[in-house]
Length: 84
Image (cartoon, rainbow, N blue to C red; front, side, top):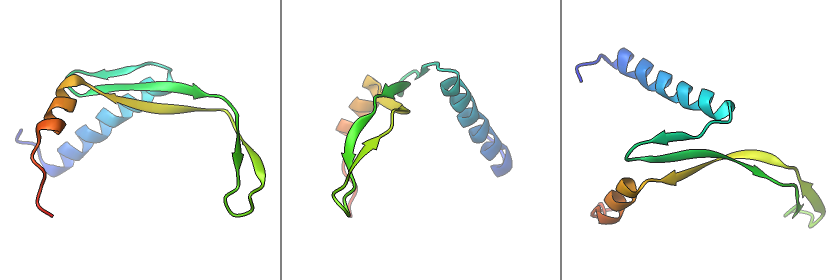
């Protein structure tokens, strides 16, 4: 693209900031050929402290989910594994 490292970094940071802003406003983010970022509300549920075994409530919260698009899924499925 002919961008300097500094300009490329700024462009990427602005891109992610726009995604953050949209999600903070409750909007779905659709990236064509890549996938969708959505918000999902999770209810409070029972949990357990793994160290003590004590029952503790896990508070209700909002989480970001990502669903890959068909093009991304297809490319990942058809990619050859890298040598380890």
